[in-house]
Structure formats: structure tokens, C-alpha cells
Amino acid sequence: MEFHSFSEFLAMGKHGFYVWLSYGLTAVVIAANVVQPLMQRRRLIKEQNRRLRRERSQGNKSAASSLASEEK
Image 1: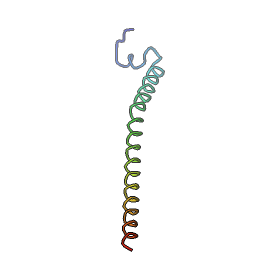
Image 2 (image 1 turned 30 degrees about the vertical axis):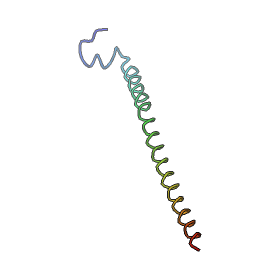
Image 3 (image 1 turned 180 degrees about the vertical axis):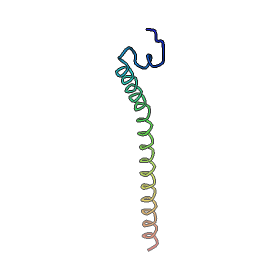
Image 4 (image 1 turned 120 degrees about the vertical axis):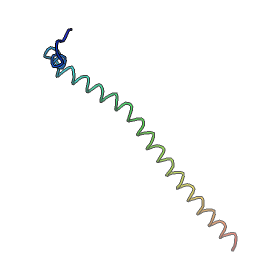
């Protein structure tokens, strides 16, 4: 297909709306496939860090309570 101007290229022989819409939707799907795992990984790391801090703080409390009971 040969185009004589940029506007003809954008019109794509009167099918431009469908052509560019399909390109746009494809770009959105590809971007979502890249961004979604990155966000999921970040969320998982935050959750694991929270869980680790909680377990460490509970471990410190139980260690402190066991020390206090040994002193009695």
C-alpha cells in the first residue's frame, strides 16, 4: 500500500480507526503484561518484609518474657 501524505497514512484507506485502535489495544496489553508482574513482585516483597518484622518483634517479646520468668 502506498501513501502520498501523512494524513493518508493515518487514514489507512478509511480503515485507520480500526487499525490504530488495534495497535493501541495491543500496546496496552503488552504494557500491562510488563507492569503487572513488577507490581506483584513489589507487593510480595513488602508483605514478606512486614511479616519478617512482625515475627522478629514477637520473637523479642517472647525472649524478654522468658528472661523475666527465669529471673523470678
